[in-house]
Image (cartoon, rainbow, N blue to C red; front, side, top):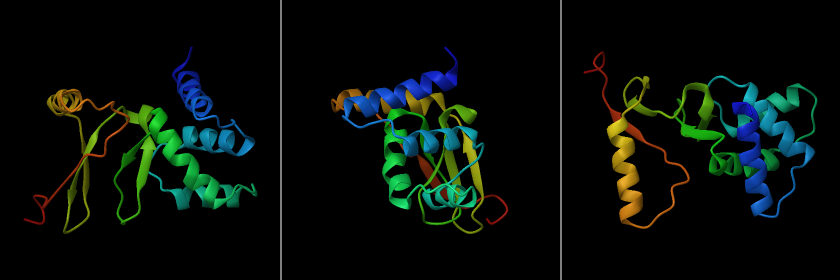
Length: 144
């Protein structure tokens, strides 16, 4: 089974668990997300559908993104505005972000120790992990 079909199965399983259907719109949203390689927000995704002439509602996009997030297909990401940004989890694997509060520079990083610590905290408080949004804010070398 390919990574894409595994992700699609996870998404379908979550929908089934929630007693939601894998509608044409949800399938189109899933497919479009899988074609993206960078960061996106709900409005930019909605605009892509409008530009393609597809009549997928903005509300449907906004309601589907949390389902994709919970199923692990996408993760929260960082962008240059206050909107929530996302990216495909499989694009570069899970990672976190450093953000400069002066110039808006975003640096992606991976830290296995943070992942281990998060797992320990989830366990300690009897939480089942779904996703996390880890952004560290500071001032980059160029702005310091």
